[in-house]
Image (cartoon, rainbow over the protein chains, first blue to last red):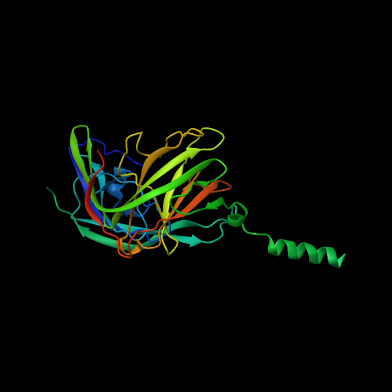
Length: 121
Length: 177
């Protein structure tokens, strides 16, 4: 789903580089980055901006890395934590699924953790 | 009795999987000739390779770069029997990976083919735009299908042929012209 960036006084931005490792173009990357700190859960779902176009991103194509910005509107009532803790989720490929027997990517689960320092501008 | 059970086991083991059972109906062809499926026809005219696309929209010039190269395919398209749309376009590389038609560029309604209703017996020229990695540009195949979920739909597959073994990549093309 494409969330247009909601207007806000300030934003939390996380820059990532995504590479589609599948065999088809896909826009299924919204589940990948999770904010771990409980006080940040209220930020909700991020919008994804393709840095190349500075516009909302759509599908990413196989073997073509792209820099993306995850954008959360930041409310002034929140104090910025000293660092950002993220968990990275991945899905596993099943050549035959349980419903009709077609291939697909299922069962998102955390595969990595990352801690980033936060900078205020 | 045993024969019946054996027969059922053999039939169950040899039934094709879901993907094969619902595979699309494919029509193959070469560039320059009309490749007709049950519902539409496509003819590949000429493919181009470009590094950067330029487009004037709402008075501003937008530039679109890519991590690979842009592949622009000039085609003619027509509906067969009934008006309809060709719902999905992709380029398949030698490795079998598919690159869907780009969503980063909006082509004018008389130039693009996405979401454009075609009429029977009235072919129209159009442009298709894809981005692929630069090391994959040999052995590309255009796949045009009724819709993206390819269960029991019609599909046309046409290889893209370059005039030289290492085709030239233009620096930029202005799509507004």
